[in-house]
Image (tube, rainbow, N blue to C red; front, side, top):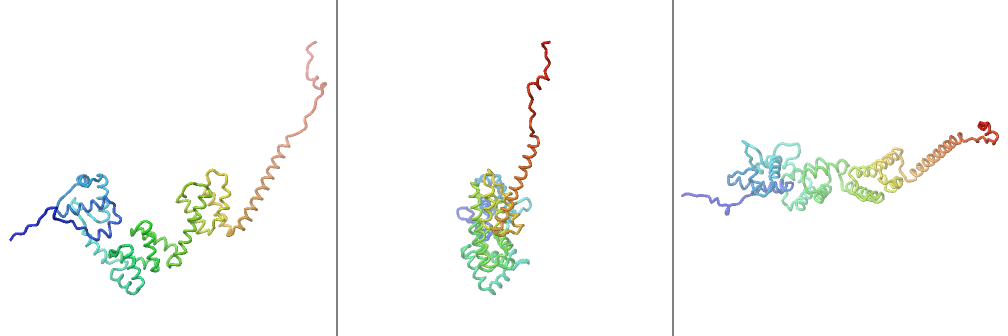
Length: 329
């Protein structure tokens, strides 16, 4: 008996690994996804295609095809061998990544830690159900366990970390780690510390808005200006009523200078001023000294000018006649 496979495209299917969907698809460009699926399709039928042919068949600009092919290689989805582009077995790659020796927890250790801590297990399950529809990739369990150990976050903080990233830029692992690093640098571990951080952040955002309104900027603050405001609020611990004392000094300026405001507030902080009353007393004293100095300078300038003022000598008609010669003789 002879058996022959039916290679008609009409009856065949191209299978996309679930690992690709969970690990690579979320951060991949639309061109990259289309080209990856097309490469899967071509590989199954043992066909080849040049970047130019891929560009024509998928209706993608040639330069975008070349960029996408390079990114697929950079992300470990394809590799070059004998001048040919080959697909990586993503399932095998993921298994090796999970079970190789590493400084972070292995999947087995992650499971043991979860069993030891019922609440951590519940939070990880909640993250899976909420953000991955119950289909979280195995590598996420290892990463979450490693983040628990690295950052010492309480379980509710870990869940809030995922919610925060999900609401802002999505669940890319490098972005989650960036936010986690930021929280860790601010000594956030418990829900109470996180709540306080959120309150302080909201307070700072409100102050930014008030500053922009008072100065009539008509625009959002730049990143550098925001950093200055963060320092005024977070390090100097100044409320808006103190910052406003400096803002009033910029009245009449066509282009309010943030460097000037920053310099004044830094000087006040260096002098240890913590209350509005201390600052008002200091500024009143300084303004008084400046006023006195200005008056002293004005008086000195007046005296200098009066030194050149003297009474003019008056001449009679007889005196003037002495300067003329009688030409009638």
